[in-house]
Image (cartoon, rainbow, N blue to C red; front, side, top):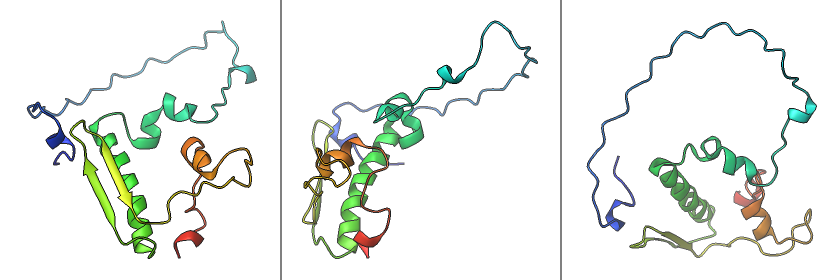
Length: 143
């Protein structure tokens, strides 16, 4: 797999051998310890972006270079969605020498008006800080 960001790096790293698969050992039958209760107070409810911070692999597939590429592809896909739907005619992708990625298009952009459910927040803030928020769930914005 070619590395999308490698040209922006000054130093080259040799290819690494794939990690060896771990051999699972048979599990010992566990006995209840009896020295602790498991109750409702042990159940955590993560809010906001905390689930992503605690388990990024569940959302982006890991924390490695491949996950970084996945994030970049998602941003580029958003611009492509705008173009395919007829809302953009130009997409610019630039990789900075520092490894940064800039994606620009002439599409509709992200709405900045107040969000109807969170009146004290703009739609931009909701999209960037609230899990499972976006304009593509119903499909009506990309018909």
